[in-house]
Image (cartoon, rainbow, N blue to C red; front, side, top):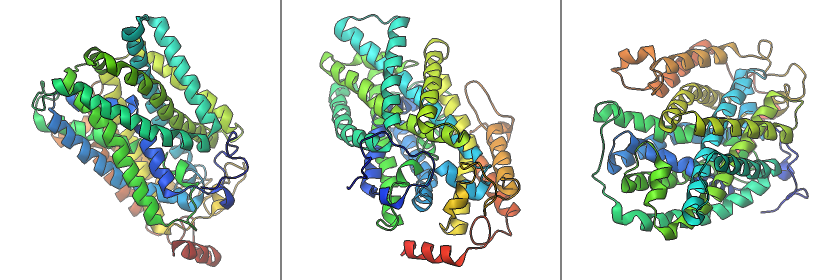
Length: 484
């Protein structure tokens, strides 16, 4: 892969359009970054969730596989949008939500990435502290956790500030290194594994508990990427690589990258009898020879995973505050994520926080993704790149200006869909009022997506051609050439 002269230095691009000469990534790069970034304990912990709900190994596995597959069907096509627009997904969504309405996507992306970054730092830091305690006898007091979380945050922020090119190289190395460590883990915990073991079902019965696992552990993985995928595919040129190859690379990267660490989490949770504290059970049950691999994964795997999340957060905050540079925005969100990590360790309950967070964010993220995909389908990938940058350039106008920069149909559909989703969510700390209508089963993501889709289609029935108006002949010709 060829690189621009600035490759290896700190990335200068924020959410502006990437020049064609610098769009030198390939579908294989997208595959590598999606697999490498996810082989970390921030993703492994989601494999523990179904087991902590009381499910057996095979029940947990089926929930993870089904949920991940359903999530990929929704999220993978989003990667094709940035392939066309050459900017990130929240900015691209301005074509359908309006150049100011695209702030909804930036906010959703910021919240998703912030939560998952804090979770990854939190779990990875706990693994590092616990492994060092068993290996070297170092203390496990509050100061040890504060120092470890801070070191991980600095490493992650540094990688994120340097940007896409460095992260891509890092994830390619981590893809193979972390795969080897996880494979060694299967050998380490195999003697204590019993596939039939299960506990008391969290929701009282098998099916409600299994469906909770499908959503909170399986579906939530791909949903976490609804605003992130464009960060990578904006560097892929549609003139060199077909949409089909990019789509398959994205789907394959998500499927393999999410399921490998999650199933490792399920396997080790069953083998160690993990209850409310996965990391403590993992470290207590690990043979001495596997402590060093755990330490390496907790340190480097977490840095790679959170670095990519912080990179995305920096772009989202940069999109919200155009006057801020990407570097400044990245440092700000790194500090916020670290604060959340401290709260997660010293104040909150791990299982309750993780479950509640992913269910709520899935409920508000799914409607945004559905509306954006409907808009993409309608305009057939034909976007006015200049009009997408109106807000970043602090100007007005363009084909996506709609009403003062907001698309009323898209914004209304997202708001109503999100409210319905939040009303149907079932978390350990909050139960939505609509649960009585669904038999107590959490189908919030399904309801929020369906309501948003139906309302958006109904309110925007008159839309034709490009998302903001009629397709310009020149733009249509360019789009047609790129599609060939």
